[in-house]
Image (tube, rainbow, N blue to C red):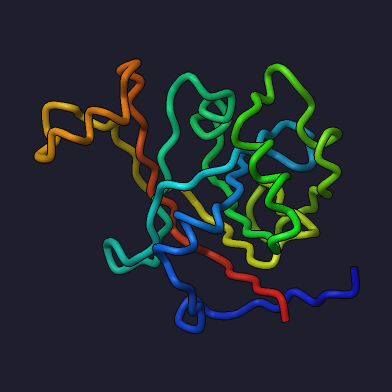
Length: 173
């Protein structure tokens, strides 16, 4: 592809956070690249910030998703963004289960070894965040202060929240 990924410090990361989650989407991957034991799914809800003096990415995964088991079993994950021409890939990765179809074969994107976490990244990505899980909790519907949030859970399949310390950041140069 000819593009170069460059490691930058978290302080250098400059993204439009709301746009990133709402419009660009991210590919969450958890597992072990070397063992070929991993799964990916598109995520559009989450956050980036600082918690406990650490840079973090917060993701949410519903327990009925195939990726949930991988996120539970492994202590790390990656988040990747892609150029717009990969929008169809992200849509597919978010609407099909890895338990039903081989997403990697169907989409043609290329998993690559990450620098310090076991979960893979992707060659076609234009941003990669390598994260180590530092916290999890389950969404508690009794704590919703805005009753309209319940509309997001008609099946009562509440997300598990994960905080991942951002250990490495790579961006396309």
